[in-house]
Image (cartoon, rainbow, N blue to C red; front, side, top):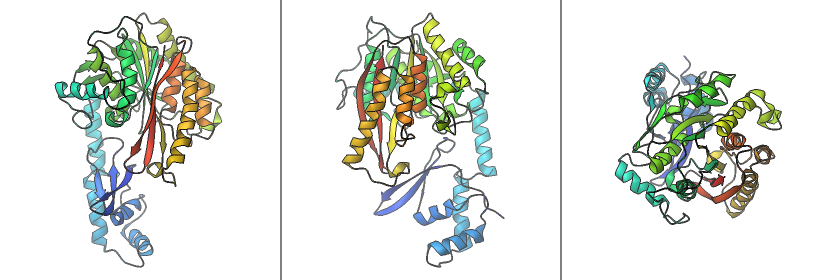
Length: 410
């Protein structure tokens, strides 16, 4: 009988006690824990494509390991471990998935997925943690004032969604700019659906919980967007449950303004499996209609509206499938291309930004491509000037770099 296939998992390697091991992580967030395997066990796991049985894997392993026949019980031990941890497409995982999805669907609030994991869940500890972002090296050097300024809030903010430790300076520069203005009433937040989805934009009516309180979702704006969708906008809503890109922005808004700001959470999946079929996404009438509606919300809404793009930039190196190591030349090349793209963002040129990223078929794997494009289209005609506040990059522990920036359009 064929063995169940391995799920779509995130794979990385690291050194542990002098030996390389392989870590499996669930990008959909149904499984919290990482699973650590020896390279040999991972080789077995990699053969699980839904068609292979034990004998097939024994044959493949014998070719890989110099004729050695791995006992069937050893193969099944690996398979059972993967299944018990939820990493196989099996009845066990399906039961896990259905229960988690049911609980999420029945909840009116999207609970914080990473509180107590990548940031503190205690409000006092969390405030201290976030205060420190602003005084770390490369940051603005001062924390937000408790009383806000009197100027208009920015029309658009581009900020990272990388973890707070590595992206501290970029978060701080961006959100300090917002803190120095009058609080917005509504924030349209475009995030990245890292585990993707079957539709270009994924909506949710759920409010977002944070350790500082719950940010209500603006139901009127969500209804307007829902009305122009030429796809089922909630079909992939469960992606919101574990996706961190919007969670981090909701947290920063609650840190600055409490629960006064209403949000509109919008996850951007890949707009197409064939991005080269367009000049830009504006060639697709359904995407254009959705983003025109976002623009109308910004232009016509009586409240103060800010658009936030929760976007990282390049993902380069072996961790991300490249066949080269990171050195100074690679870093310089990535930064030069990133700055080309960011110049188009600062010029408020959505189509030029998309063309800049895609002129080499997005070789740097800019994950924020679609959410930055969407944010720029949403403030078209509303913003008058743009400014790059910070640019940086951080190493990935599994071998690579991730770049990010903060920009403000006002």
